[in-house]
Image (cartoon, rainbow over all chains, first blue to last red; front, side):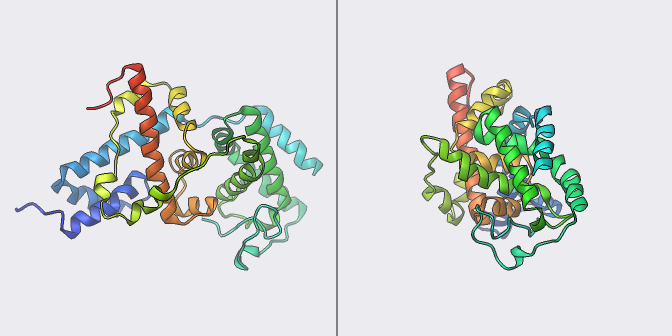
Length: 82
Length: 212
């Protein structure tokens, strides 16, 4: 089968979906479409994999800091007074 | 996403639609239930957001406490069972801008010219990514990544926190930040690339290879 060009609707749709997938804002149908059609453009798939890995690395490194224990009690006291 | 916003008489929110002005009339008992069951469970996320905005533990605690007090005071403008987290984040963000950010000698300024035009550009594939070796990030410790994030202007830092750490949707972020969804998307893209640039500079200084 002849490879699709970058003028194709599939390419344009893949490029529209790329930032949505990176930001985890896309639907599962969008992801399926992207995975199915982006095989025609390895650089697009490579970009997706790198961006996804970067996002996951940042999330893993930053994490969520728990609030100090005394903060909850302090808020409760202030609200009771209010 | 909740349609709730802070009330129109709230000092930090002068522009609200009629729909947004719908107020509930909760009993004292209901208020406490909402506060305990819907607001307080968000305290870790709230503190995390506040800390990453202020970069100071005491300021973060003050900001979270102030946010919860405002939330309780204006609880009648919150619709029970809707998105409490987004509602609280919006109050916290406004409190930060109006109270805490003013204390800064040099408030962060962002040149949005380049950012806002990103999604109007047809050259999306060329600008979609700024390359960075992921291994270099994985070799870093959390504090190093945290410092790089904190080196970004607060508006860029905020979208990364809201999207990547807190998992808000574009629509929720747009409402929290009072900006269009397109701006959220372009700002997020630019923020990630700026963060990569910071991390690449750090990786270079530490002798990590920065390219595949």
